[in-house]
Length: 352
Image (cartoon, rainbow, N blue to C red; front, side, top):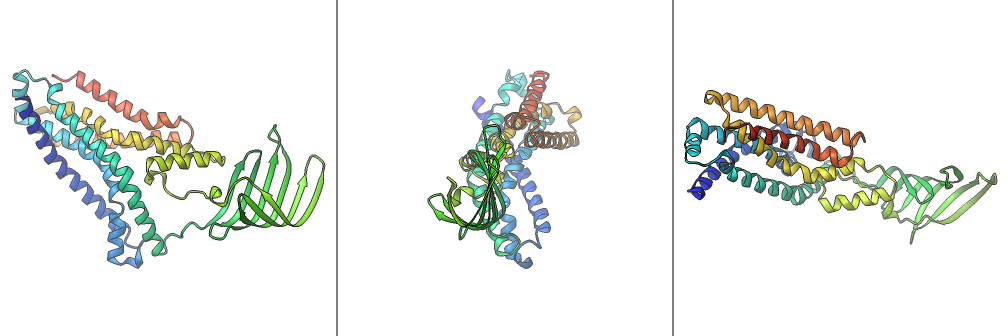
């Protein structure tokens, strides 16, 4: 009997989920289409549609928890309104046991969300970037306006570094001592990468602050212990990168001395956000079971309210994490922990 009930509840939930998820995705695609008409191909319908569809995976990841919460609440409320839930409880089946197919469903959705995030989102981001480049709305990253990097005991700066030919202008290198005080500075009007971490400087001015010396060279070959590729600053949106690529990017930027707090928050979000579907299920089941006078408007209003509150909380904690107020790990997982606790409290207060 349990297996038949599980299958019955699972199919019912799946029906509502597919309906609600489809409505949400179509709604957001229409809104995105209207807002992006002028962003691709001079407004050509084909390019605009491709651009909008390239956003479909990221919309999928964001809308899955919302669809899960609403569909769980609607399904459980439907069981309650038809008195099926009352009959199930009278047969000795607790609300906890009845919730098993919903929990399993949320785990499946979470795995699916993580898979889409790892496979489909990065691939779609490349398509989106190429469409924007071909339409002239975005330029390929071949020139860095100004690149700053920390290398061992020195900081270097290069303006207008062209990654295609390895040439740049207005090079500066500041050497520091153990007390983090500048002891020397090298400036050059132009710089060119030669290979094997070696660079050629032209019109070079070298100053030694400790000895108060000044030298000028027309050309000077230096080994900066970093290649042209190593100086490249990633332009990819960390939200649209796969997990291991983001980890490598964080290590690379950390080695160059960049602030990686924002990227660490996005890294932990890639694990935390797919789990929102499970948390939404734990909240949706007791709220759906408690449906005063079987009012359908109550279910919709509460579902919308909880959804808005969850995303506001997640966005708020992420902002605190990216600004450095909260540790990145805490900023990513604290909202899930808060609403998970809320779900457990609601379960404990329900008539099981």
